[in-house]
Length: 409
Image (cartoon, rainbow, N blue to C red):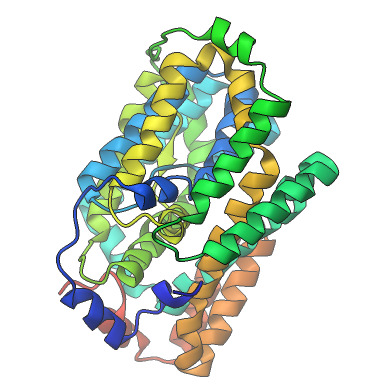
């Protein structure tokens, strides 16, 4: 299997997949374990940044975040994890916003997503947004992740970091697609060994181990209103494009035998965010990047997400008292390589637009560039991409409703 093969949803591949025996809903093996690290390069730095910027209780954040992974893995039976809300995370980190405002924003966006789901607006959006526009959003996300990996993560430790990243990159390329020896196990293992030898104070960690539980929190109406205006509304366009529509499309690409409706995604997204703030957890979402990351490194069932969630639960329950030591276990250059391969697989999804009408590839590229470069680029790119698609084809609405991911069977 090469880097791109799992993501080409041609008719013959779909038929081959459908002819295979029905896969397990939740499985635990070396490949699911390897896949469980497929999204850590995106999540862990954002979680750490949010905790430090907003002054949150690390035990609550890690336990609740991990619990949400476990629930998602069991509910969907797919390697589809929860992720921190990226736009919110960036705003909280850069503007040093209060944790109460973040919790209020979580309640606000959870309510908004449930309203869109119940009223049918979410399904309508999924029907009318063309696939080429979704591919453009995925391209923009892939370019953003690749830029983050190469600009901030890989160079973070000087020559030692470059050496670690070089080993991780070579191991991943050589073992890519190997179900017996998944590359993520060697890559993450190398990072842990390096951290234990050179950075982690094992005696200090042992002395700081203890049991901690989540702290309950009650957001005020003022925090909910402020969170809605400052964080939830800027986040909503990215959530609609990446967390809902692009995630559903990625499920169709990777698991064509599964028929996943956007209402399911919107419901779990909304319910999760109506629960997390009361337990001190950060707002979360689904995301095509997380799904692709878990799949790329070996995850095929909900088991990879359950194992991923257990990692965070264990850190929160027993190691939150030595938070500063624990986060050094994963050197940034290692996370950068994981992030880079997640980005490459996301960008590779663009290939199916190259075999269709030339205008679809053009639209996807334009949307991707806008999403990558502009503030609020996902919503701007989505609007421009949809306008280009339908203005060039007045009958596009009818055609889209026959072919796009939100269309019911």
